[in-house]
Image (tube, rainbow, N blue to C red; front, side, top):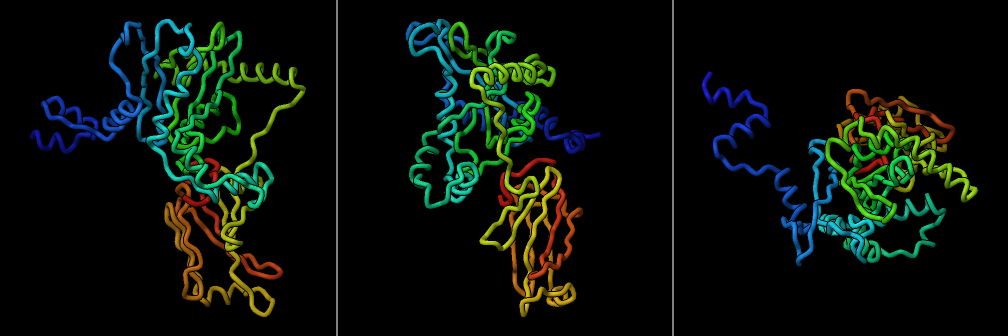
Length: 364
């Protein structure tokens, strides 16, 4: 077999290694991404700064794009972190430039929907402006989510997820691998995380400071902290309940869950979901106060077209609805039927999700 034929049969990874072995410089998108992260965070390759000894503190990047691998990163921290300003959770400030550099415009409509849902507020009650939210996004605010709470059994070490505080309002994609870490830590259903996230570890006693979180030993399914997370979190919650006299707080359900339909576009359609399926209900119409019959609707050219990330409905020679879906569905599994109600006949579309998970919204 010739060298040319060998190269054609190689996988992309094998071809990359093959070319690099022959002295050809190739920079992949992953190489550029890691360089961008290092440039953003202004990492320094030195063990001494202004006469003070420094060491590497390791943490892990979990990209939302599942085609990209987890990546171990590091930052320089003083070896002696007992002085003022050198203890505490340093990752919160370290990661701000990352989220700031990747800032996107926030979605005010999505903010209003979430505020109404979680706070019971109407749009008239919301006093936060688009400008204020955008300033928060541009500052690169970092939110922490504790996967494992500090307990004597884990030497008072917590494992945290660090994420963009307004990632959902920026319409960043869901991070499925981050949710999987939450599920393994005993959160069921797991929280939703948006965009790229980071995993790190913090020791809370005798002083609050970051400690290493390593790729491989700490990210594998059989990592010690994962194996003990559920019981340690239950113990922590039990202690907190004793102190506060409160029970567990449940995470609010996502839109369309538990059989509660979410209305969209001023009633143009509504939808419900399970982890496996999504159902979309579109009122077709009525005449003379009576719902149209199935024969009448089909005779007026009802067409439904399915695509992995799009749904298109036309009726009466006009486009009735075009949806760019939040995640992909299996077009071959999509079906529709007509449901004749007392006042209107509705088109009911059922689509099977390609990935079994709850969607935070229906549109991309």
